[in-house]
Length: 383
Image (cartoon, rainbow, N blue to C red):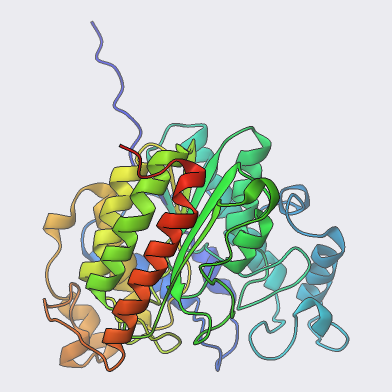
């Protein structure tokens, strides 16, 4: 008797086409971080063939985005200019108009849609698109380096096919665009752990933002004060994410795996190390396997991005125990990394920033509030 074919493996998505675009020399989002991550994964012996990636088309993007906005973005992509387009969030600063900005956005959204198809239609247990996670974009407005909201586009596609979807966002910045997209529905559960909005863009994501109407209780925010390090973050994650996912019972889980919560990111002030970040990825694997659509996100220290997402991919592959403590020497020498920048896995040191005590107290209050107000709505925490 012929043996059955092996089950589909974790799916890896990468293309050098991403590297044709550039936000500009002074912009903090460096698209080359994707190439650095891909290189590190290869040097660690964990590279996989990528599936062919195509850009999302107007119909797919239009499931979430306003057609007029998409038309303008496409026009500016061919003839970049900024006059009279600030109402759409486009112009100098966070969201520059650069040649190919529409093509860049459509390509990363296409990769996220492909990740969704690989999991929901072709049976892969997880699909990882490191280029995605542009969670700030609104239907007719660019925001926070994001022109097209690929998580919302993927979730819309799944919801339109009758699926219940959970969205878990561990980026240091609040996943505002995704939250507002599904703020009124109980078919999507959004959970965001992020730096407190009083201290960081976009200024939203208070614990009191819990949804409205049919969506009351299905928007969950865990705002964390600066100097929230591994132990605080892990505790909040464990208290909130597993019980809510288990209660909601989603058909699919979309996760935004931004790495800007790691120590030394220039745009955020949380103090995670690879211990805390790796714990979250491990737990997401346990909770979401066979229904896991994993996409990238923020991260502005390029070495942190590479080592964070290499760690995430190793966990997805089940090969975390093969990782060395330090980055490959060839990369360290070429990038001229200091001694303290050469860790792949951070050493086990306890970090205690000046605001640690306040961060700890505030985190306990937020968890208590959510358990009191949100858990009963979803039936979480019941024996």
